[in-house]
Image (tube, rainbow, N blue to C red):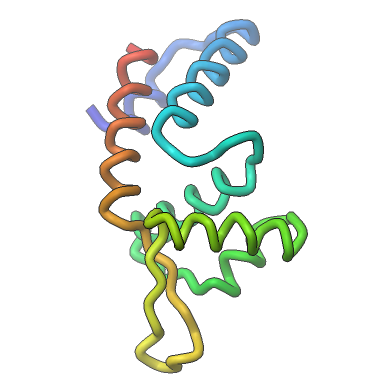
Length: 123
């Protein structure tokens, strides 16, 4: 069952259950993605995944503009993610100076594991 459809049909949950679910989700995510103690890599990865899922090319410039962190902090996390094989960078067909971000196979396989683990805790 699609995660969105399942979640939209769920009964209302308490604030305590929500907090418990968020903590568990954070643990699952941290065990599969190189997040560390910052939300910057998490936000970078989620935006890159969403752009791929929605079939909307995402430039580095557009990615950085979506985040409300310092340029320097964002850049260091972004460089680490690209250097360690989590985000692909490709030149745009229209302008070779423009770089398009996309998830790597490594990232997509880990995201599948996250999705499977989250499905287990919400059932």
